[in-house]
Image 1 (cartoon, rainbow over the protein chains, first blue to last red):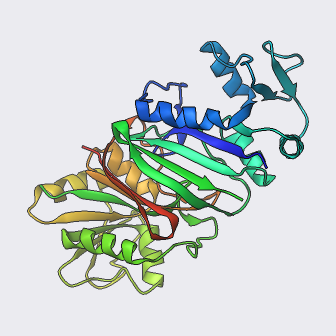
Image 2: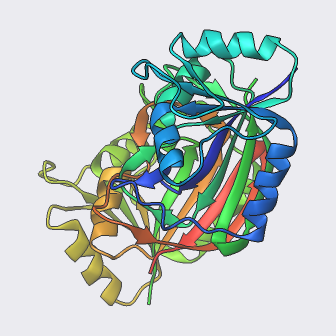
Length: 173
Length: 173
């Protein structure tokens, strides 16, 4: 079955972005590129949190990509924010469960901890991966929120990356 | 100069203990033992946060150890909670700075994120290390709190440990 994959580049204290949204601490390297390329090679669907979508759109991303189904989870958007992007306002867990039951490749979740915790709570996330950067931000957009209980993980891969980063990938289910 | 080292075994979402204080998810292995032995080999001082001390004491630890100076940072304790343990109620950052200027071996900080963030803010922490366990706790005793600003780290060591754990050690100063 297609996997639902959540994660991204975060600080050691678990933030995707600083308090002011700053991501200037991100280290782009060949290592990071290869990890992203490997992930995209097995995916055909992207599920955005609304705020993450807006950040991506502001940076010129977030639009429809050829061969990729894009969804934005939002209770406030009334129309698609970009061509080729579908708005989903129903329960995130149920939507993703239905999506997983359809044929297709992996589903990448690009969001902050709010959407991720909903999906973890719903038990539909199969893999979590972080590229832990060597910085403490103190506050900001958390990569993980309280999912309401203990969730056991299984380490699939871990290795140091260029720039003092550390890759960790876990199986959830 | 002697180093101030902070860290411990935490969940992927950065907790030292679950909401109810549970640490039954901790994986004790030869790897973990070796890391602790290596750390103790270069240390002669231990600085407890008050709550961490009480947890350690309740588990039969926390007392004076031969050849080890033990301090408990506390604004509420009026007398030493155990033999060979000194209560420190002055500013944590200043106390540690003074301690570092004296001859001695490394200083291990055993506390939650509150004391650690004070020490990080004061700029007296030299090394941070975590043994990241393959579990999400959702809530509990945070290993890191907001230290008021961005703190750059330098990765010294990272490797997978037994039981799906991952060791990460960083230089702070």
